[in-house]
Length: 498
Image (cartoon, rainbow, N blue to C red; front, side, top):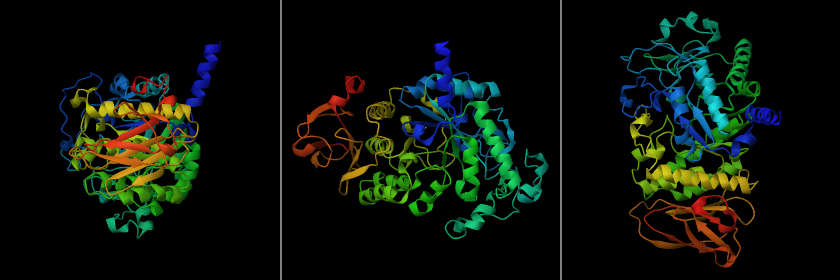
């Protein structure tokens, strides 16, 4: 009886996970079609440039959860699950393998599996104390062809043109200058038009709210990533998120805090594109702008209502992979490390751990199985180590996830960030010098450590002693990142064998 009660308590805890619950999580992003086949094949062909289905499934993902969990991740974000339009491989825009071209809210994409498979995925994650985040689209449905031929009756449930805005095409110049056009006009192109749902309609709102509530409860979903939030009227979201009853993180594709941060009044979390753009700029070359990065860390704390529930990332399915901009492994380690130890919920996109280097869409959507799920790769081990430290810091420091990052040092090539409460914060020292960078010593103060505190640099597992007022004399070289934590707080963590 007791075990049944405990199981029920856990199930209730997982269901309707809040922003507070999600703060402690570390997320691995999966494009289902490109992660794992049911057969477990590591040789099945998949040329991302062809933009066609490659055969990944929910069952394949279940079979490879060890690969994800052993990197220390505590949540998985999967691509949209709804039924998609049928697009021939010959279409210049490719097929709907990514999941953003839906035509039926109430049916699942059979290419990924059955209802039972999706429920099994949620169960498999929950049995590991991991969360499931599902990507959803409310801005649009899709049509294989141009705007003049749309058969609205083929959609479910919005089966009439009255549920959609009349056709007009969103222009790039509309973003930042014409928000009405951004919200009411269509994205897509004549090959595949994305019919813009009228989310100001009371009946549309009611239908979406009922649908998301049912989706969450049916498949035991713990959180949402919401696509193209900027293209939807803001007042749509509060009732939608409330109906979901979960944490949600929205996509607002813009690098300005003045554009992105206000959306937190409507969706609790937002993807941290302002940090993304400055992070990439800082680390994509040895002349990257560290001053702008330091400034952005402070802007986020000032301009956003809560930077600690934003989604932080270096790569995703919409942006060029970082190694396509800078293939230096040390640069990747620094940029990834700062992503994972900044304010917010860290998100690592599948394939980052294999140093995949695909450029813009569609080349950044490579099949992970072609790596052989190599657990010996440099970045697989590095990400596992950083996640291990973050998970431990969360467990011993109740204020770690809500304590906002402090820039404690910055020059033209180096930035040091402190995160965590009391006298045991994590100190990250990040460099853009690259693997050919010369050796040098860097003094880092304002660490929060006591004089003489014993600390461990967890990347190299080297022990050292803090100087007066906790100052660290950091030996830098070959562009390697340095991450410090007090030895006394690492006992039993497994970090560096402690």
